[in-house]
Length: 569
Image 1 (cartoon, rainbow, N blue to C red):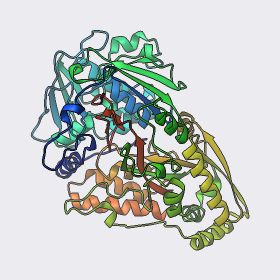
Image 2: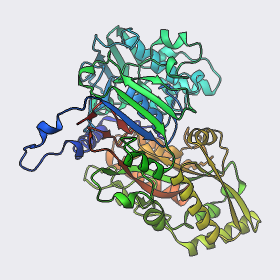
Image 3: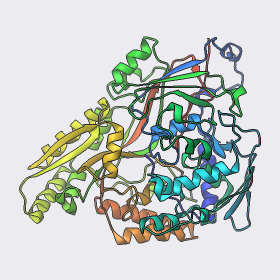
């Protein structure tokens, strides 16, 4: 999902704070009122149903529930429902205090933050949530022994000492977790030191991310290595608690309202029942039959049926899907002309408009459109425009040159994709396009469940992989630093020293305009190298029963929040 870094200096973050403010101003359809400011139906809408239960369909199982380890959208979304950190996103995508009493106190150099905690927060077993829980949770996430897929992405070069711990683990050297820049001054005072200055607003956004959740050391230790294995091995301090979940292969799970939650009085929903449905039409049929209240994201075959239906909610995500090309798994993919051929050999416009047909847009870039703007208000995309566009003639030329350079006439490539109906349809289209436009290429499709695909990505057990990425924060480097040499999300053995230097320099400069230019140059390099083959920028569509109000989606971090929902009569 979201494995990325953001080492930001103070001057840049002052600009980013404006981005966050702009994001928070997006329309909240659930709360829209008539132009005259009067809500004539308010009295009727506020009549709550006797039963406050919502049935939700998800398109994938939960890979994990350990905040120190998980790295995918589904897991972080479910953790967002059951866990809470210092801050959280509200319905307007604003970061507001959760366990924190208020905004942190920032040092004059912008690198030290003191946070006072609310003293009445409890875990659902009755234990108090203290500053020590944050220290333990963060240390566990960064500890190389935990083998977290995400701890070092979210902490290295952000929290003081994190990068040194990560490097020591990689070098099999001793390290001291107490050197991490987080300390409990007392039970309800937390002090955090960052490697580089951050604004208060940006710091709050960082602290709201799932990797920074607290963990109860006594409870985690008592599970004897089975923490977060099942519902019975979980502890909640959030709006809901997991009452039924048999682990990563489970296709059904249940959450119930956490009565000990700090804001339980404002949580109306008493029960959330989730089931996995990987067939979009079956999901829609279930909603039409009144069996569920919220569908997963709709497939392309379904979206046209609901274009004007008030039950459909659509938004364009800053999420790009691309083909990762593993230069370790297949020697042919080490050749830049082979990669360029693949990247230009499929019709992105047809993929977006005919195959997906859900509002998604063709992607000819590595950083999404309509995502972030510079200090002049110009979109990041203005710098490079479109690259690696669909061009079958150029693709064929590059293919023939590449085959000549590797001394082959035919190439067989494994294509790792998902097992949902939308994934299968998209992957079949890609296979047909690539084999049609690149003579001598044979694609072998391998459709696997989400968790298995994540595991194979880590092991680099693929040639081509259809993968997507959504940002963790509003900054282009959330995408740009994915492809640094040996980066944790690289997982395709791409390396370019010039690219690496640009990313490093961008992380350390105090000149916001120069940094912007560096990241645009880096994007051009990764596209010129055809390290990836961008496919589309995703639009999301789902159906919600009219009686369910308050559903909230987010553009960064966890995908949804459920605690604001209510069921009306």
